[in-house]
Length: 404
Length: 69
Ligand SMILES: Cc1cc2nc3c(=O)[nH]c(=O)nc-3n(C[C@H](O)[C@H](O)[C@H](O)COP(=O)(O)OP(=O)(O)OC[C@H]3O[C@@H](n4cnc5c(N)ncnc54)[C@H](O)[C@@H]3O)c2cc1C
Ligand code: SF4
Image (cartoon, rainbow over all chains, first blue to last red; front, side):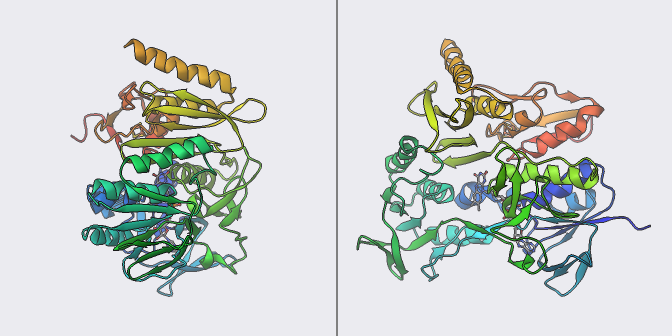
């Protein structure tokens, strides 16, 4: 009998970690990692941070080189993206017309940047791939003015990186009056907005964009911002179109059960997966690094141990590095939840905001520049805790730090 | 026996490793990883390697004792 084959489609963090986790689980079948880009698999978070700044090289962000792939027994099929799936025949169709047979299939095609609805003249960028980041870095050599549309995490990080590169005129535009107010309570979201202003970035919040032309960006309030370079950072859309018509349920991502299974022997993970999250009791799609890695480990387990599958029920965790601020979010955070602020050892720079659900149970935390407090919060979320207890534990930290 | 090597310069204090294996990793008050036990018995190795793979900056390596650098 021939060895079983697992085909993994999508060769970034989720796909690479799935391949490595399969081997760690003792999988002895063939593992094929399919990617549409020709570059070796690389990591995305540095694209708005150290890689954009030119401080990390392509080698630094490589997740798996040829040698490591060979050592792990992973066949790389790069520059040859998947174009279709024949579920009945258990075959994936690739761009070059070839078909790969699989016993298990892992869908890890992630997401791509939502394209600019205002057209794409030269000098208008999105940032999702290494090529995107290199093109932006090249344009930033010309200096400013730089206008960034969208003040989510990626947009905010690019503003911070550009400022550190010495770009004098950086403007961050967002139609929402207080960006991030969906994931943060208004006071904390405002504090993040103020951080940009303190570092010299102009913020234009609460105004929309009506158009981008050769010289700049036109806003809904009639003003115009001059721009040599424009970045559009308005979110991401899952790469699921190639699966339409395959028989899988596609609805803003590949719909999966609690075991990350889209169908028998078809698994999805990372940014492209919308799975049933047992803690929340509903379908969830996450766009964070740690989720992709944890889901990859879970999927690998489920491929090797199909009789005892593990549900994917993670505690959400996202980090963002902006200027010299380290922002960490864990669990559920946001406006509708009650919250308390715990000042850190250096309250101007470090603090934790703890959120509670209706019953006073600890729901999540936003922690700034205070890794130990973030760790306490994540541990408490993995168990179940009352907000009061977590607050006391974090406050004990400052008491201890003050003594030393 | 395997040994844990941590790149303290690279560590960013995300603490994913602590979530993965809190008997082996912790972080200090400055948010830098602390390796609580550097030598990993073979039965624990896979679990610790799993935890190391969750480090966003690849600051952790589990190597064979005596092998490597
Ligand atoms: C600029 C930037 C900064 C970020 N910063 C952070 C951060 O600080 N913290 C954090 O938690 N998260 C961050 N993220 C999010 C994090 O990087 C993603 O959640 C993570 O990359 C998801 O991994 P993935 O493998 O699911 O998908 P992706 O990383 O999107 O990878 C999918 C891969 O599949 C390939 N692919 C797509 N279609 C096909 C096809 N048909 N055939 C073959 N291959 C295909 C793509 O080319 C890509 O390489 C950031 C993302 C970006 C873009
Ligand atoms: S996961 Fe990596 S970056 Fe985070 S604390 Fe551990 S070693 Fe440091």
